Length: 213
Image 1 (cartoon, rainbow, N blue to C red):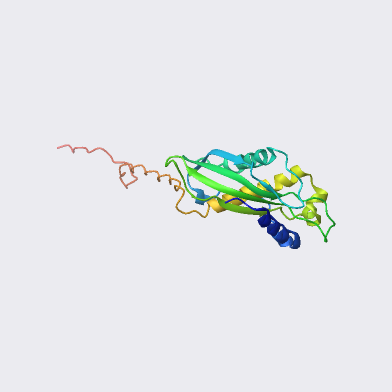
Image 2: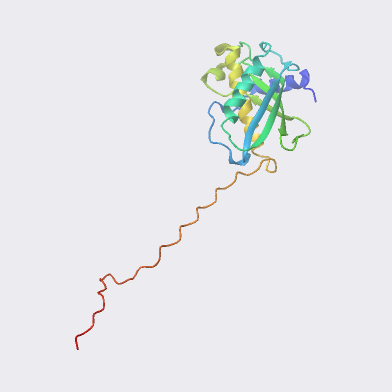
């Protein structure tokens, strides 16, 4: 389903009136998610041709979202070195890169809307029939609390949103209990057979001797 300008305006309104909409930062990778099991990233493809630019937004240069998101997908998911191959398809559906505004009065928030599809390579099929929608906002910081439109370039805003978007994808994947093959648990080493029991008597045994007639 294509994202509409009206929907973008509704999201922008929520973002503009509440600082609580800011996301936790995805800059740090954190621990690998055990729920992803034996995950190995195959193709990670981003398309942006149908992205809707929201109101009060800077324009993203062609290819900028693709480069930013694909780089972040590799940074976050390349660390998973399982044996089961999965492909990720990401569609940029809409975005706002905040423009300068009056702090605390008209300080717009940046946000990003993604549609995510996952393919199982071995099964040769999609795991979700419809793209899963993810909406993320910029991380709350001293800069974004004022307005990232005043304090950050468009490239910095995109990096922030790409990090948060891909972190949200990782969290979503971790909730899909039946998608991923659990990692094989290494078998416990078989203990070596114990050495033959030794005579418990520590004293030396003397050879038998015969008595003289």
